[in-house]
Image (cartoon, rainbow over all chains, first blue to last red; front, side):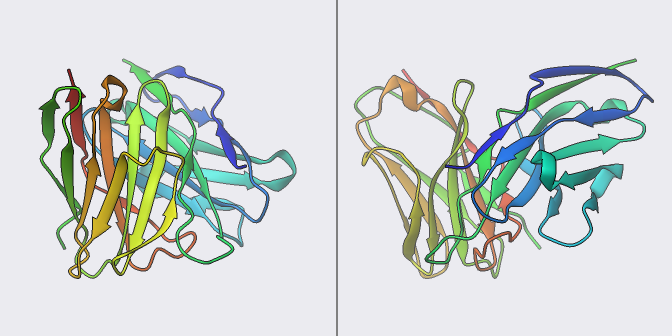
Length: 117
Length: 114
């Protein structure tokens, strides 16, 4: 069964500092990988996704992520965080169902990002 | 284009009651998925509908059911509510529900069971 691990429950970063959020996945086939962000009381917004090709993926709001198959990782990075980046970040994995159709996304437990002034 | 809308946004019910939540996908999207989010279990996949048919189902009891209408709007029903059903229920839509296709999430319905 697929699984996603986000080892860091909370991360505190100073405004302007760089950020890396870790994500490790387990999936039996070629994974589709996603990073979503959730602000308090809101739904999920897609930051970026990886299907194939270039392993360094650019997303919105200055985020990027690198897929490393050998490490089963898909870490999210940002060179300089802003106070508005404070939120909950979720890594998710999905894939191809044998019968077709949407394979429900499997999410990690999330990383709560705190920005210090 | 309007985003995914969910109604109601907040709901309070008592144990044993049933509840129906509604989701209107982005115009043109035919796949609707439902997720439950709780502090303890995180985000968990409930089921996915496409063209009024349930194509995929997560590991939830039969008290959780859903349906989709011809206009792609979807409803989720939970019968015989339990305290543990208190959660944020998120709906997501995509064009065809193909693997890897971006799912766009609504703001959720927050259900509190007393």
